[in-house]
Length: 272
Ligand SMILES: Cc1cc2nc3c(=O)[nH]c(=O)nc-3n(C[C@H](O)[C@H](O)[C@H](O)COP(=O)(O)O)c2cc1C
Image (cartoon, rainbow, N blue to C red; front, side, top):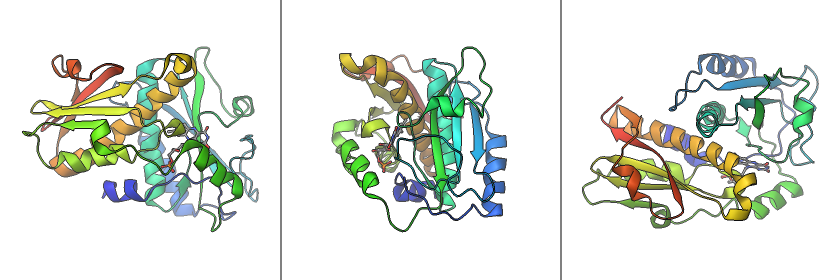
């Protein structure tokens, strides 16, 4: 069950030097090949940059000491538009959760990596950029001190209360609580948890909490990735609970978010 994988996942920043099993690498490769469009119909470009044989430090991408021992990176490339970033977040999280389900650790990096190091591995079109990378590998038995410091700085273990994030009307199906819990457990940049949702008889209306004015420039791109990640969690768990679901633009639902939020889309249950 996807929810079990989501519940177990935590960011891993210290990896064991053990190379990826061949079967796990093949699984990852075929998953990456199968990735299609995201909910906003943008095709995501996710490259695998695996560690060279016998190189237990993985690809040489600087992470300011945050990551150690990775066996490769997923590199997320897209054009700098709101919807492309959301679709990239959605599709990269699909790959990250596949890795989690195989016992492979991951950590999203949007800030603490040297973009210039990766440019050697990828061919970027003029308007494309590297939005984020995800180092992966089997988790080391013992995390390093810097890992604890990063978690503390981001407040990683603290999640906002369910009622602070989501409003569920009485007529909603009880199954939506689990689906929203899957959103609450999603990773987000600096553990910002920018997802908000209102559920009524029309569906699950998803919103993004806007960053404070000073942080808009730096924070928006990351938030769009965060929202894409949440869309993957929400859609995946809803699909397991309700069968078919589909994203739509719901004019009435879009009005329900309240101040300081931006409407994203509505997940309709029983559609898709
Ligand atoms: C889009 C995105 C960007 C992130 N960037 C970084 C980063 O640059 N460095 C880092 O150490 N962690 C980064 N993280 C990891 C978050 O800090 C982490 O997901 C959050 O604190 C919640 O902790 P958890 O993933 O263990 O549940 C990022 C996460 C996301 C989703």
